[in-house]
Length: 415
Figure 1 (cartoon, helix red, strand yellow):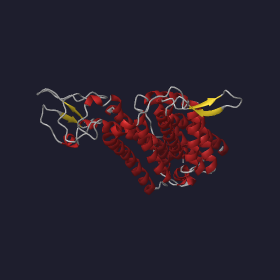
Figure 2 (cartoon, rainbow, N blue to C red):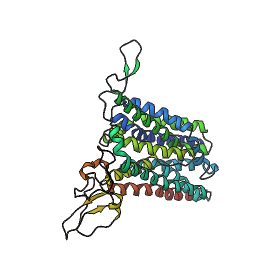
Figure 3 (tube, rainbow, N blue to C red):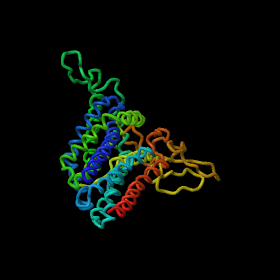
Figure 4 (cartoon, helix red, strand yellow):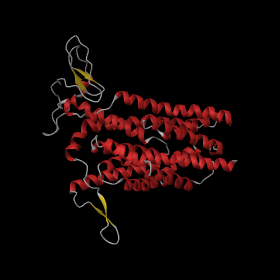
């Protein structure tokens, strides 16, 4: 019976890793595939390689925390391991159904917390640290994104311009007897530098994904001794890579096509910020969500870029009824005739009311100063949808809560 449960646990772990690879490959390499820097197969290979490096090095800390930190390793019986992995897989199902980047890390930890509460073995101090990191990390992502969007993005955009390449950056020369890899000879130096930057950051995201996500697939099995740490990493990365080469082809196409509607530069910024936050937390042994931190950075970047239409003084000061009112959600100025309510800007685009005279001079002759940027110059894709943001945040909170409650009920009845 125990052997059968171990086999079931290995199969469920493989399923979780497979789905992680399917979703994470698209998140990491979507910009690179969408801008035609690499093909999908190359993207999957690079993602698998760097996910392995991340899991084999930094990821060990996260596996230690989740396999013998939140609850003692002795609590991970074969039955408990299957239950925890089941709720981790449930998070992936919820994410796919609602199209929301739900955190498998948060839900996996939630399942372990349910086990700890049911058995009275939860390390409350460690959980306080983890939950604090879950609150602080998205706030950092939002704050960094907002600061970059408001103060640095126009300068970066003026100096760095990324677009789609006609042919992939990397190509295989099959004219000779032995195929040889090479660079696209038609690409300019600027294209090569930009493409290399996109590719480096994509590989960095793959490293970060491996560091944070390998534990989600195998931590319970490592905790109960069914497999060793090294075996767990190989199982996790192997199934993650399998997902990257198969089901990720759809997510790569979807994310790649969608993300090219957003400037490639913006995608690089949020990828770099999100991956850095998760790499630091993984080094500390704290399981956290790459999707959550990255999405919060997207929201912050959009708000920061939109808020350039007004100075900080204009955003902060109240205005008399009937005059231009500052929309604090987007930083835009909406005007309405006296006696009528200001409806504010439509979600996804800015109102085109008259802005007050700027109080901050232009940073350089080609880039409008803050408060001097016309609302219509801020593209719709740089903003965020408040309703969609609320739905995403709700599911971020709901998924681990459901995992904790369901896990607690399950283990309270079984153990």
